[in-house]
Length: 373
Image (cartoon, rainbow, N blue to C red):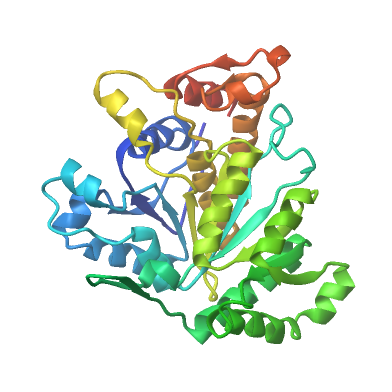
């Protein structure tokens, strides 16, 4: 069978620990046998980021700006414990995701991947809830200081970035024909959060007619009220959140729908650049088991869907229908494998007892998907 050709490369951003192992396995088993894969490779593994003084992260982000589409593996953001695990580190490097998001000035959209055999923890939820997370500023770019009797935190945001965030959310809502909710705490943070609310309201005036023609709604409420409403809802809408709120709420939503490894994530910039990634971390615990010679049962679905998202978008932008269709087929093969009861250890306990799920390791799971492709 001839391989599917590619004309423009995807920016490939490698990562750390167990997800790095799965990254190569997915390429070897699910991509390279079928695609003449063209990528521009950047290694964001912690050791190489340290070696380049994190310049490689900036280079990767700029490459996405150049080529339009990137796909990223999960990476480590070092803390004190990680500094002990990796004694060669010369600095506690910042989050690579935060750096990439800052350069692209995008919005992160995260949506749960739903299958019939796993019911959401919140029994009223019937449709996915997409978290739209602002990807600039807040605590992720804050300055911290400690004195004898206090700790201090100074954070900022840019009006232009908030406007881009609002426009991206309204555009995404129109494209997906879903209601858009936005929430902050402007009753307490009257200036900082108040400005977010005001900018969203101003921007909505430019989209109001299109929203009304599609029969969809823009809705604002306080973050605590939004949480209560979300839990009582049926789902099927976009929930826009500031950077920190979106970080927390996306984990809550993904876990309540099933698993952190069952959520798509894409960063969309105002000028139409796309960076796809898994919403979860590097699965450290499984990685140490792998280093001891074991084959963990780590769920690769979110990482597979990061690749399929990037391949589909590359195909759409290049007019390569064959590539876009392959991405759809790979997703279908992945979900059919789960529906057939072959799954990793994180998902099996979430199914009904009479479903008869069969737990396999990551290698067996990806092999089963490859057969269905």
